[in-house]
Length: 402
Image (cartoon, rainbow, N blue to C red; front, top):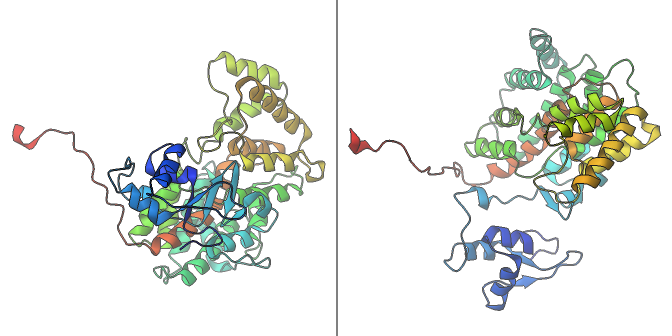
């Protein structure tokens, strides 16, 4: 059944990717009666029923691309299309001016409520802080987040209830608890304010909180990234919310995912005083300039564009020297290599522009992504359990050789 809002429908590009063919071939299937094309108001091009595409994908007439359940994951959470990022059909950039709690609730339930407020138990927050106080003073924020999640879970005996009402309630409480535990502020503060209290320095302009709020929203989800896929695998075993968040944190803890902004931060630190010289020195090494390009976006990263726009606004109090250096690098690299800054570049610029902890990008990425992981877990709980059992190809010693 075709829904007026486009549910259960695939664009031509999505259908082509699922079938492993070119877009032109999709229309050839239409002319042969193998697919039915439909038009929807406000959607450019034709759309196709997902079940019809799946049926065709299983035929010999189409080139199969699936190796298991991964390519058949259906989600109504995030869409990346034509250089835009959407949460449940709403532009994430437009949503980034709303509170993090409101957007989180929207991503989980589809209901956008401005007055959304999450509550944490101050006793549990203090227990988490006590545990974090025993950690090495120079440990990373993601390590502290991981411990806080584990400690908080032990105080939630009903965490094994994977019903949607329970999961949404637990997720809201978890976000507030972890955010508050990272600093010393009240457990009643909104998530963004707690995070700001934890990462700011004495010289940080308080208006940076506006940019932080937007960053949390824009990093909340990004489709089936590696950590999100790991979360869905964990959820398919019916692991509880705290365990699936731990699975996501494990996947995100790598230089190619959650820590991708580290080299950008190091590079920008050397470029503030003389961006052209720093860029020339970096290019002389033969290495790619970090923080540019993306495996999903082809022309622009909307998350980076919005964060950089906010940083350029004098009202938000970002260090103009840092912003100017970043803009110089963007102009030089974009014009020379036909590329664009990504979210790692924007988060690193944000961190330096307000004198925040060096691992702030990784911290924001991990904390914000709890929202997306929760939403994907909720979807996976509605699927058949243990559906990610993939058969590997054995290439070891054959038994007969013994």
